[in-house]
Image (cartoon, rainbow, N blue to C red; front, side, top):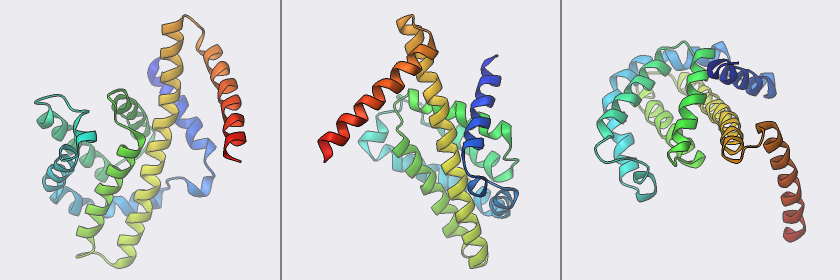
Amino acid sequence: MNLKETLLAIVRQTLEEAPPQTLFRPEDEAAILKVKDVALQAKEEMVKGFYDTLFSHPKTAQVFREGERPAREKTLEGWIERTFSGPIDEEYWLLEAATGVMHLSRGVTFAQGGVMFSWIGEQVARRASSSFSPEDVLAFSLAWSKLTALILGVTQAAAGFAMMQAIGQGSGLEPALVQRLAAQGMSELVEGWRASLR
């Protein structure tokens, strides 16, 4: 199985693990695409605000290399265009899984990713509120919440796979064995935590 097939399998498994009623549905995609014009018109302003926010905070600024902001801004512009134009399909989730792992490998945390997804959603919702009904803005916000939760979910699953592969390669152990050892160690660790937190 090549990397793309492996990531697709991870994405599919992640989506299958979530209760069906919590998954991102066609009506959620429609709610996001409905505010496409608002998002695209504000794209440059949002991208600037996004990176101004990250660079103003030492903990998020430290993940960037000197001089790379223009390239990162271009990447975010492309992501906004793709997300608000659709389709949000398997290929989209595959790209999110791969991109998420790349972000984590640079030191971006789940917390940082999550709050910045929220930041983008808030920016779009605020702008949409002046030209869309409250029901449309609510539908967008709920859909955005589902979208970003699943992006973080597929990222976490892909990151877990990548971590097991990396440890296996570095140690010479089979990734399946690394996974079993990690699960056993985690179980023992949690039992210790339970005892300590009583």
